[in-house]
Length: 148
Image (cartoon, rainbow, N blue to C red; front, side, top):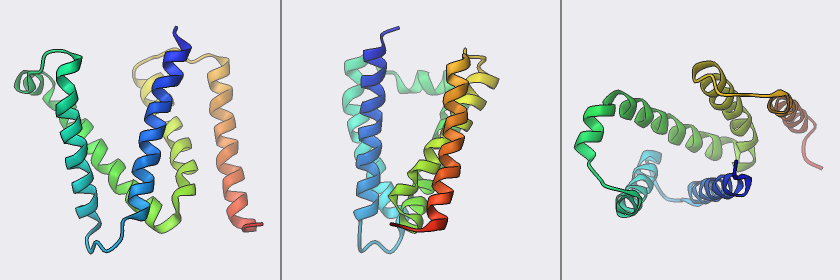
């Protein structure tokens, strides 16, 4: 496995997520929060459509016909994620992303990866999972005792 590639792609996703969080947190003067999210999605869609030809042939209709159920599932998932991010960041602050990250470990890595798709998860992956649970406990404790 190319661990440098793995880390580079994960870092790219993390930077993109940080950019999204910062933009959502700093947006002001919008009466309806879905307006900001919708505009962000339009910008994202522009970049995705522009980049798609660089990764191979593009046939949206054939992809939709072959993977329609999965397209709907993924689209609904993005909707829930964007709405969740909005309320998470606007009501609890960007630092609360820690809880989202740990819950994503549970829902994505463990439930989807291990239980649904039967991906390999060794003892070190399980140790990472359990220490992520400790992260939730420490975060909750930190919120309880306040800021130093």
